[in-house]
Length: 130
Image 1 (spheres, rainbow, N blue to C red):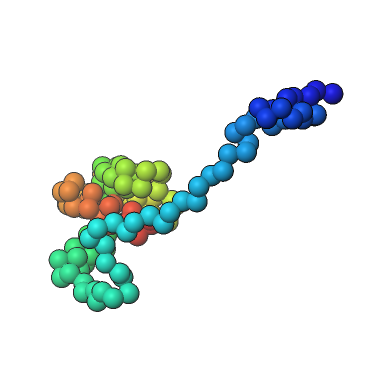
Image 2: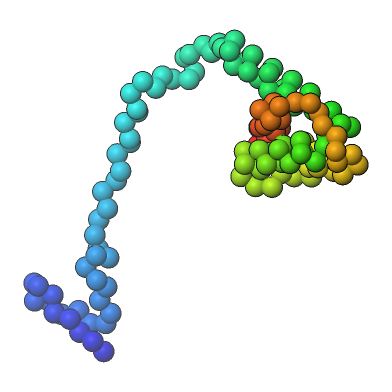
């Protein structure tokens, strides 16, 4: 059996854990509240009209996609943007997946919308999925 003599001259027999095992960890103090943050219970919230307008615009963009007229090119733009917004392939019930399924029935069709409108609809659908 191993023995160890300590600094004060006493002898310890058996396994001796390293000195770090006896270290006392000081209790962490409560972190200070960041400046500029107010108590949420005491603030009264108002919804910014710009936020509501943006939400309505996004919803209308998603609703403006007529799946009976989506072509391959439009479906590709929608899928690309929604995939980029989500960070993964959109699920089967997403606008992008529905557009791709629909585009196989009429590949040369087009919605007549510019790519920006298609991308906005795809981002709106991605936000609803998140």
